[in-house]
Length: 139
Image (cartoon, rainbow, N blue to C red; front, side, top):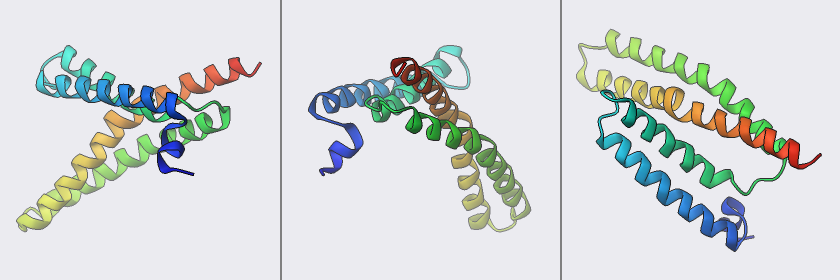
């Protein structure tokens, strides 16, 4: 089986996935350029972009089980990656005398923060909506 078929489904689903990917990147870019920290609009566009990017990968799913697993992963991922972010931030402060080590820990801290605060909440929302939608469709 072709890798694109595994990731994005059949030809029709793949076209829709590409449109979602393009829309997600555009929304995310506009959100980042409109100053994420200073405005509600920038925050909303950033989350909307991440939401659409995740949707591009899962919109062709039809089973409750896949969305349930995605929901569990995101529910577990949010506190785990937030904890990892706090651990690496503390390590960065403890190793502040070594610039390379401190910057490496700060980078990991930023990565885990982005995962815990930006990506996993959008994934959780997609998983909940997809789970409910597929449960209703299968009735």
